[in-house]
Image 1 (tube, helix red, strand yellow):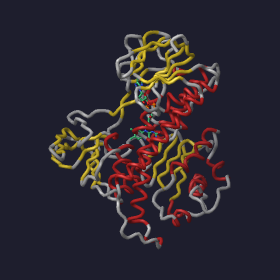
Image 2 (cartoon, helix red, strand yellow; image 1 turned 180 degrees about the horizontal axis):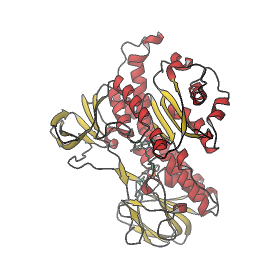
Image 3 (cartoon, rainbow, N blue to C red; image 1 turned 135 degrees about the vertical axis):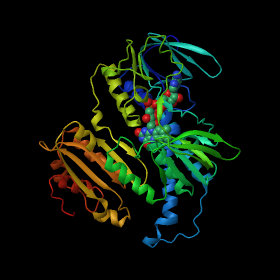
Image 4 (cartoon, rainbow, N blue to C red; image 1 turned 90 degrees about the vertical axis):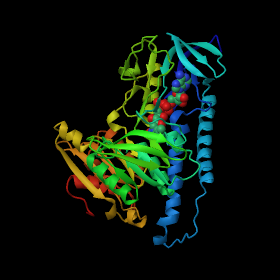
Length: 468
Ligand SMILES: Cc1cc2nc3c(=O)[nH]c(=O)nc-3n(C[C@H](O)[C@H](O)[C@H](O)COP(=O)(O)OP(=O)(O)OC[C@H]3O[C@@H](n4cnc5c(N)ncnc54)[C@H](O)[C@@H]3O)c2cc1C
């Protein structure tokens, strides 16, 4: 291996790195990938998207079985939680998925190196394994795809026993009686939902006055209302200034945002979910002159860093810190490295929260359009007016479509409701084709289907929804 000069070497095998590696290999490039974890797939497959969605699904089934089925004539008395089996199911989903990535590396003849990768200089990368043994490989191009890590909170030290990051919250051995979640963002609401469904009293503490900050304001409000109805508690405009782990519980100090009131709360555990920050430790960026911007690697067109032959993609370059954004960047970069061209329309990258109901958004919010002075029309439709949603007892939520007032082009879509993450997909296709609300409205939708909610919202852009 020492004599090979790779066309491209990836540092980090998350969705950015491993997907890009596959595409590069498909295009005939000689590829190496370096990963410090024993398994491939990065944050997403090991401690992120996949385990959290496995637990969200299992805990949803549990809640349905305990509360949701009687109205449908399915009597489920005596339903019990077996948390150990639920965790085993999650672990097997993760295990199968990461093994799948292994297989894909072999299938595409990508050389996998286990250890910490660091840039030795232009065209060379050193890999150091956990025994401290190093080797250096030669490569024409280096792609940094090292992702992100949990953002710390001052005064709150994560021990993964009582004071948890998302990683610890995915592996609890028993259901806490009371859990505090710091941060009403995607991860806080998803994992807070898991533990509430399994029986914990969950209180979410948030500095802002809305959950899912940055989302369309109406979406934040409706999502929070739904989650509150299910029993999630919210303490807004508040900040946690200290957390102290006791023998078997945690005491936190919460201050109102204006500094007026300080309160102490005790809980069985605390989940810190205030966001993630780029991970660049040990890469040797400074030494090699790679420019940074507030901790993120600075890139220009084509994911170039400030140093020739070094590129970066995924969470480590910022923007939406999402797996599918990292994957798409990886594919485009591989194609550029193989001499093709490509670009990403970041306005058509969705954000999905896998709570119940789900929240899915793409494109501009009403607030962004108003601020930019864009004239737009709004179409809305509630799930409650959809027959399939009623049959499924899934009437919470709505679809909102924002379309340019002059051209009718779809500029943003915001959905709170069952399967929102799947329903939004047709809107994204429409947006990628520069489609209009009229295009969505004129498209025949199967009946009775949840997707008719999207069609009706599109009709409502022109005030002609049929079932409103
Ligand atoms: C709990 C949770 C739930 C999430 N849910 C979703 C979701 O539902 N949908 C979604 O789109 N996103 C979700 N995300 C975000 C998603 O996981 C990330 O956006 C995505 O993993 C970023 O991909 P990446 O390839 O940039 O980096 P990562 O997946 O973080 O991968 C980077 C890899 O690089 C490795 N690495 C770092 N430094 C080195 C080095 N020097 N040498 C060798 N290896 C190194 C790391 O070990 C890691 O495996 C979730 C995140 C969390 C924490």
